[in-house]
Each structure stands twice: as C-alpha cells, then as structure tokens.
Length: 207
Image (tube, rainbow, N blue to C red; front, side, top):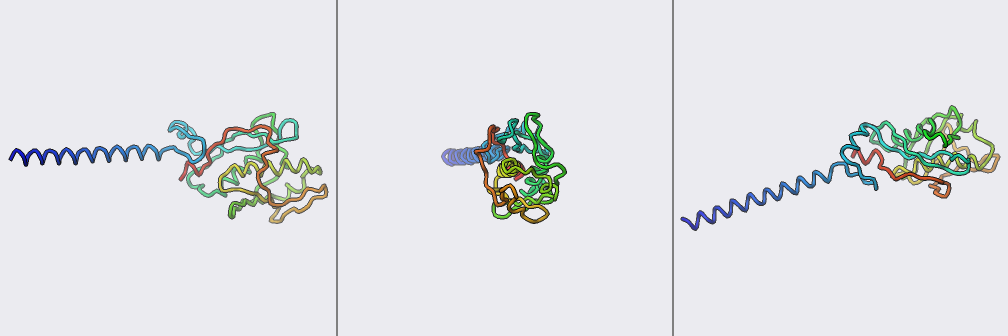
C-alpha cells in the first residue's frame, strides 16, 4: 500500500509541475505578443497607450536652404477601422499638404492641392492630386524634384510601398516644359539632409 501511495504521489506532483510549466510558457507568450511592433522601434505599454488612436509618421519637407529634404515626425489619426495601407498613405499625404511643424522646414507643395485618392497595387502607390497641384507647380525642375520626392520619400516610409506615381485628375502630367518628367519614382535618400529615428507604422499596432 505504501508503495502504491508513493507512486500516486509522484504522479500527482508530476502533473502539477507540467501544468505550472505550461502556464509559465503561455504567460511569457502573451507578454511577447503585447506591444512588439515589427519595425525597429519597440514601444512600452505606457507609450502605446499614450498614442491612443494615433500613429507616428515620418514626413519630408524642403529644408531651410531649399536644396534638400528634412524629415520630421508627426502624428496621424488612425483607428483600427483604418486597417488598409491606402488609408494611412492618404493621411500621410494630407499631413504633407498641411505643412511642417518645424518652422525651419518648408512646404513647397502647391497651395489648394487636394489629395483625391491613393491606390496601392503590388508595392506601387498612385497618388491622385487635384488640378491645383499641376497648375501651381514652379517652373524650375529642381524645385519640382524636391516636391515630388517629399511625397515619394514620405510614402515609402510605409512598409508595403516601394515606389510612387503621381497623377493629376487621374492622368500623369508627363514631361514638363522645364524638362522634369513625371514617372514612377523610388525612394531617393541622396536628397535627405536630416533624418529621424525609424518609427513603426499603424499596421504594426493594429494587427
């Protein structure tokens, strides 16, 4: 009887140990699932709560000397209902149109420009602006180049966007009189004079 009792006691202890170990593993897994964005920026629970329904976006504006692009971080309203990358991309464009928060940066996107739509297909984002964008563009190719890459570099900060095309009222502006030609553009880091730390996108928080 004593032998049977000892065996039963050992079995009970073994079952309890397995359950405790399993519980610890599940608890650790739950901790790892919380606030662990896929980008290089890791957020604490407090930081994520502080953001609420906002997401950090990296935007590019013309630098003070007018010869390069400078980055700054702004917050965009973004709720779980805005899960589509196209929604975030449109919000980024709208923040660009609203202008920089840093007073040393300049917004050279033509006034009265409206973002009509943003469509993403296979890593390519097509941004459609209103007629005001084309009508009020400067005549200088270098200035147009900075305007275009302010949009391109800002949008390619979003994962899943590798290249950007700009249209006006649904059509590509083509080649301008100054020689600048609208096409499909990829990120151009050579124009960036100052950068900011990489931040996670909204999709990292709402997956």
